[in-house]
Length: 152
Image (cartoon, rainbow, N blue to C red; front, top):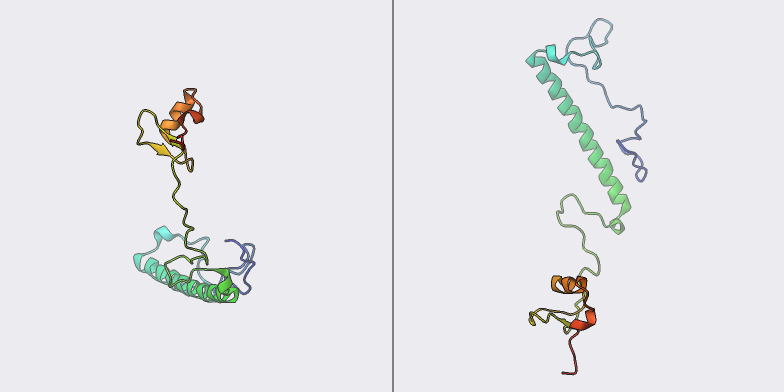
């Protein structure tokens, strides 16, 4: 687990914390009030199905409570951060939109370069170079050899 320094009071403490939540004892305990076996020495493979089911139910219950508590704490932290944090709420599936989310429209640009072998292939000089031009430039030709004469 990592540390969440931005929010105080989180149930997810620093990774070096000794807090591990409440302990749950499954099964009988001896007269001293201590469990017969700890989790370190518990032999899960030899446990009966009923006992394993009880253990699983107890773990599910504790996990559900811890997760619910953590969600509450983290939602409080998000609320403290406020809308300026631009965070997607849990109910919302859409990412937040920026204030200037609409793309700027670029005016159409006339082509500046033409493929002499296929005159319908042109390039305005914006974006990635077309393959036909890259091949021609690699063969030793200059980019000005493909420039469209605007005077014509």
